[in-house]
Image 1 (tube, rainbow, N blue to C red):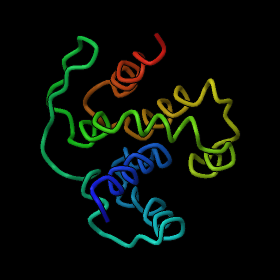
Image 2: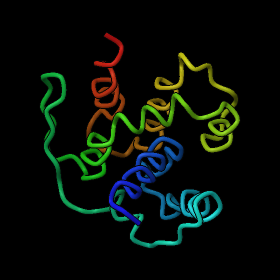
Image 3: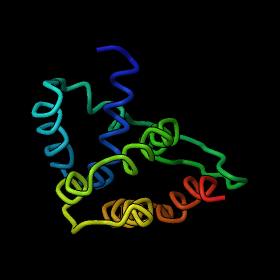
Image 4: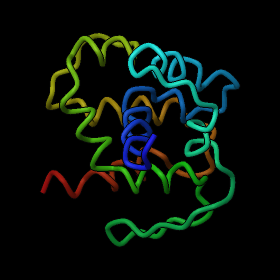
Length: 140
């Protein structure tokens, strides 16, 4: 699999499976099944971009974030692909992968931020504020 293909799947994982931001031991389970079912991909290394250790520092719209788990830096690097996946996926796909009802297209990013924030509630920073800051520049 090429680096670009892997990056695309990582972005889709972030977009479709917000539970990957949780601390659950099973957080990759549905994503792994989805990879096999939808892309025929069986790879334990697909989890690396989400679970790679270390800390990251980011500057987003003038706000400085320190000591972030690496997955947030990875999310930032594929933000546009994540957003595309959220906005271009069918309503039914999001309802199933997000385990919610149907979401109006205008509310999708906000809904995703709420879902991720709920799953990431044990983080030591305000995930909701971080994500709103990351995605706000697109609304202007």
